[in-house]
Length: 250
Image (cartoon, rainbow, N blue to C red; front, side, top):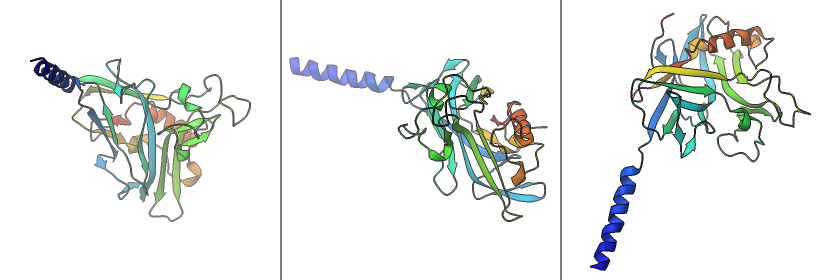
């Protein structure tokens, strides 16, 4: 009888553990251009020129649902960073698994950024995804929050790039991390109202470089003195880069 009771207790504990285990909620992202889903193999038309993605990577962090923090792999997403996208010649990731239960109709928000306390650490000793050399500038400036490189398929040798990150970071040298927040943190927070966890989150690239001629001498590498950066930062502040609507009305 004693052995039988022990077995029953063990089975009960296994059952309770299985019932308490949370099923991850997948957040699926998808690049778009003017209402059309695009991949590395697709071209999109801008000012009579066909363009194609060469690289699209970005960090997201500080996810919240109605101001409640979310978790990934048991880690509070206030301190967790996820990397989405990638280089076209490599595999790309567009999925984040959230451990919290998310009911439809609530508001989802997140930052397009790496938090300051993680942004300026040594990339040589960092764990994935903060060990990506193509997403790092210097210890002083930290990581690129977003990297977009596209190539012109109509005019050869023509390309355009936008690399987002913090600027105005003061430290003893480029090999030293700043002790205080950079003058231009360039962290943008996005919110999606009435979020539906069963639907895709679209990345509307046409909204990113709206009102901007795409030319190789019109790149944006973060400088506020750049007219291209001023236009893009204004576009990012509109909060329409990410949503669950395929076509956004002007």
